[in-house]
Amino acid sequence: MMPPSPSDLPLSPGVVSLWDLPGRPTRALIDLDAIAANAAHLRRLVGPHTALMAVVKANGYGHGAEMVARAAVAAGAEQLAVATVDEGAALRAAGLSAPILVLGPIHTGEIEKALQYDLSLTLCSVAFAGLVERTADHLHLATQVSCHVKVDTGMHRFGADVEQAVAVAARASASPYLRLDGVFTHFADADAPDEGFTIEQVTCLDAVLRRLGEQGIRPGTVHAANSAAILRSRRFDYGMVRAGIALYGLPPADSLSLPAPMRPALSIRSTVGRVIELSPGDSVGYGRTYRAAKRERAVLVPIGYADGYRRDLSSRAWMGIRGASAPVAGRVSMDQTVVGTPEGLPVRIGDEVVVVGSSGEGAPTATELAKLLDTIPYEIVAAVAARVPRYYIWRGELLSSPVLGIGPPTALTALPAAGAS
Image (cartoon, rainbow, N blue to C red):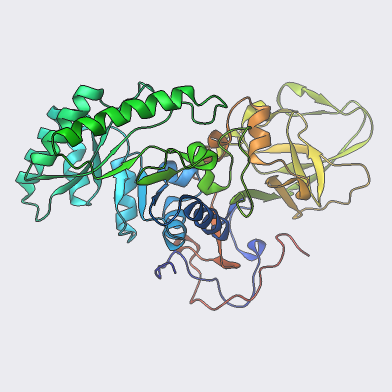
């Protein structure tokens, strides 16, 4: 079970729906049951002897880092990963006690904060390891600083080459201030049908591990597999795997489908703000790029590119209304978008509009929007703006949030379909 928190309590009083709550009607609904199911399935895939690290950087890929972390840990994830010190500190402030690894480079001015919040740091140079040592000495820490050494095995982003990695690991292993808890790399091409480059990367990582073994240095937990590698095989699991996009129920590539019961956790929902009757020749939006060919009905949806709904979706995407697909009409504005409605479909102000969801709702998935934009689903979900409030489902119940100002919790027995009238 997730530990009790003011941010994960059932709403009260009585049974409510998403639309009974006050506030802006454009909302992201996050299914923590899906997050937990995804994490549990990945945990079963890798087996009991391989640890699972849940990657919750970028605000949990737009889903909300704290709540995703809680659900993932509840489902068996042993460790968490973030990209920045501030992301890790926020999880600690929220009460998360699992090990948290900062995957990316940090500024020297952030070292003290990282140590104060008990974050594991990624080391890539002896010089940086020395700075961490001096900071730990200055703070008079009671325990050693947890560190992982990252090996650049061919991706050529953050990391150390073989010689540097061995030297840094040796420094951490011998230091009274540091504790070598892991050695890792990141795959550049694990979703490709040809595993050739991934095998090259593994060969490079194994060379580092062999050199460390020759020096009697224990590397801690070795990890390399990302979502694509986890889904493809058990060949690259080592002692731990890092689940990123798959944790959120989205495939890392078109060639890799997610097995049941894995499913997307995020949907974006709004409501009809205005019903618009168009006559032949009427134009819609900036630049008048859409013109009605006949008498048509359209609706205004309060979402735009400032919410992460990209302007490139103008006249290309669609949304779901009463299970039917409604095409975007004209240009997406900063805060609003107009969509046409299928002929004969009854619509009224307040009806639910599914912006990102499933085909059964008449809406596109995040993966389908990514294809329209020639990008990847990672970008679609991570780009959902902070001004879009997140609401959460846990064990079939809609959870409250401190920002909502909802009163004492009572159990929910059901969650009516959003927008049900």
